[in-house]
Length: 625
Image (cartoon, rainbow, N blue to C red; front, side):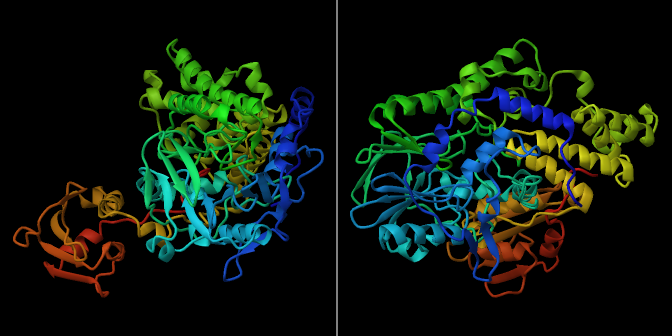
């Protein structure tokens, strides 16, 4: 269905933003354009089968004055992040920006080029490397560095190197200690739910344009090509650790538990250049991403930024990151990093200050104000994370989901709560009437609350469903935060057009191949339908022939438990012998006959176990029951 125009309330709010925000400060535009060498033309990247996996040209509409359907601050940020091409950071360090959600960086060494963060997809990384080589020469890749364990910083590794070159020792892969465990676990354990919500967060299924997706604050969106991972060959474990790679000296700083569980910063003395990974970018980041994740530690985050300032800022002439554009000049670098540090420290400290005065997370978030210096700094604005949901994340980190009010200890879920609210208000028609009144005066938050209850009472009520979509759309138009906008507009789209599911998955064969046996068994345990398995008592052995390792699996009381022990056919109902760990995935999917899988013992035990496993649902409903 066609989008609706912004309401007078939204247009008025945007006019106010134009008059109160520091739009005269255009330094970011100068920095984003500095060092430009060439763009990719056209900036449309396809897979081998012709499928488009990246289209930055779709964002050509960004520029000029913001339309009334987009917050002018978000329009500004989106215009900056849509800039694409090859840029010189300093002589010898180059970035390709705008070819994926993240940046890829090339550091020239004695014999070739070191690649930092090879994007999400094989195709976009290969296109970026080709653009670099077109203008800087056919230098071979001599090393790859992953700054941290999120897929937009390693998924395109096969576009810049090969497993064969890594195995042969020609290309070391460098990452913070713990990288592979965190990279794999995040995309597997809760991967289906995260991917479904990420479709909302990034606006994957939204049309691109002034009434739709305009970016996600951190970049434009995620590419949709081949995702892979190569296991690091060098783990960085200590701050102060130094390595010389292809003649380039690199000094590392560990920053675990910040924007990612495994993350690091590093400094290039020969270039006087500092890479801050994703811990200091040109927006407020997430302490709890809307797609779902573990709550991040803003106190530790701020501490590592302080350490970076003290360790590197006097020696750096430029700071660059895995997203956005660099900052040049020692005074500007110190100011940028200090404000970023203060941003996370203030969110942490003041949320704790107020929760210790008895305020709940939602109460603190409602009127939480940043200091004027942070409000004036464009890079402290909430385009990706927001003050509101980050404050709630800090509260959750320390206090959990319960706010202490006993009336909220055992609340009804939405399917039970909605009909009760509707009945108390006087029925669905009366509720829609009240919601329409709220919509008319611009109280879209209250209208959305009412209509949410309506959907969980009767999702087919045409008047409620239509008004709810219109309401979410207005909330999207008003949002400075890109991920909020995308969530609101995605909800409106599904209400109007139906569930669009999850179009992409990051659990690629390459990713799954890096699962340890223990992680694979964890996935099986998560997949058990507990109530259906209450009465089963099964013990099986799983032996991996390539290593000789054996695991005893027991399924009792709906719980799958595994232990690494010697095989004991006398106490196991069945034994599965697997050629390698990947065969376990095939076995779990129901393949019991293919080469590489041998089963001995009770022929009924393993089918009984497999029958207890449910597949996750990549198209679960979000805005409807």
